[in-house]
Image 1 (cartoon, one colour):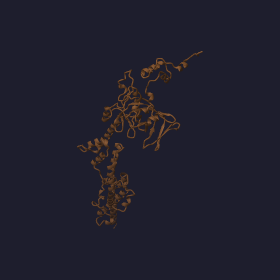
Image 2 (cartoon, rainbow, N blue to C red):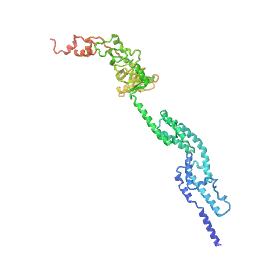
Image 3 (cartoon, rainbow, N blue to C red):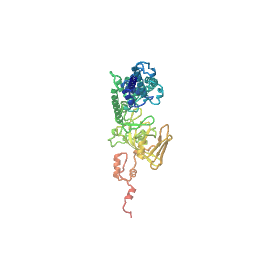
Image 4 (cartoon, one colour):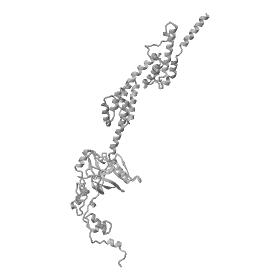
Amino acid sequence: MSQSISVQVSGDTTASANQLIPANMKFVVSNIKNFVTTPLNADNYAIWRSQILKIIRANGFYNFLVPSIMPPESPDQIQEGSSSSTTSNGNRHLTDQTLSAAICATISPSILPYVISLESTAEIWHSLEAWFQSSNRSKVIQLKNELHNVSLKTSTMTQYLSEIKSLVDQIAAAGSTVDIEDIILYILNSLPPPYQAFKTSIRTMLTPISLDQLYPLLLSEEIHIAADTARQTTGNDPNMALFGYRGRGRRSRGRQNQSSAGQSRSNPNSSVICQICFKKGHSANSCWHRLNAQYTPTARNVNNALLAATTNQDNTWFLDSGASTHLTNSLDNMSVTSPYQGSENITIGDGSSINIAHSGAGILPTPSRKLQMSNILHSPSLAYNLLSISRLTKDNNISIIFDANGFTFKDPTTHQILLQGPCNEGLYPLKLEPFSNKALAAGHTSTDLWHQRLGHPHKRILDVLHKCNKDIKIGKHSFCTSCKESKGHKLSF
């Protein structure tokens, strides 16, 4: 009797020992949270599934995820049979329950209620798979739509490629994939027009290109396009004034485009007025009478030459924040003028170029003080007179305030209002009185008059004036009473 009892106890001990949790299962339970650092949520099912599959396969428990291979059995379902069969089924059920508990430990509280009532590991696994596949389909469609609409815009090439890679990774995490050729197509289609030649070369390649090969080519192309843009920018004059239908102008240096250059060569000096003979079409440097000291222009030319270029010209100025210098179409708007000797020209909004005839300065009168207008360029072909805001504020230390009603000139030191004007259809016009050019037209005046104008100088100075301008007649015998009285040292008695 005692022997049989001893055998029974020994058998129970062996059965308990055989139903212990395997060592590899203990490893899975102890380290699963170290491998799966982020619990399962609505956005990371694909990543979570990949991590769980790897750790389960590595430890030999994949058959617990597939019921058709080895369905787990509970103790109630175990039929009467040998003790080895009973022990095997009990171990399988114990392992299955332990594995399901380990998987549930990696599920977030928002997802756990969907599987909390399920018993086996296979039921939990396939329930999650069915639930997430249906919800991820709409997410994949949304991500692919974002991938189709992504564009370079103002981003750098590195940021642009990183955005595309992020969307592709999210699509993969949602359980779908994007073909490599499709990714390359998305990248090329979203590039701006400067990359057109690059896109054509990639599309016409005979052998397929990989993403690892495409990325450095795109970064290199970005550098080349930026360098070309910089060269085009520096090729223009940095001191530009934008010119368009609203009265903006631009100065440019160097070569113009072919059409503009041809236009300039056809009649380059049609608006230039010679200061020697006062005729249009050439400058003083190329005048036939430049070395003729005896040449005297006709009286008609003397009186009307300075007005020829300003016939029917408007003396309204438009304030221009983009202009770097003042531009005018009338010499009446300048108090000091000289022929322009440079090679620059003015490029208008339609791309054509017009010549600069004169340069000089002027004065902008205000009720409190006069404002200097330095560096005025004159071209009769200009449609409008442009007043450079930057030049005006720099030369006169003033501030200009713009609003919907008009503009205001202010002295920043005293805060005194110097001038105010209206806003007309988005433009800020300023009406100025033209300068008188009568003093610039030489005529036959008496020696005494020139002597008084120049501050009673010595006769030798008047002789120099006569050498510079033959129209000024200096008499040999002249007498100035004021000079005699101011230079006298003794009284008459």
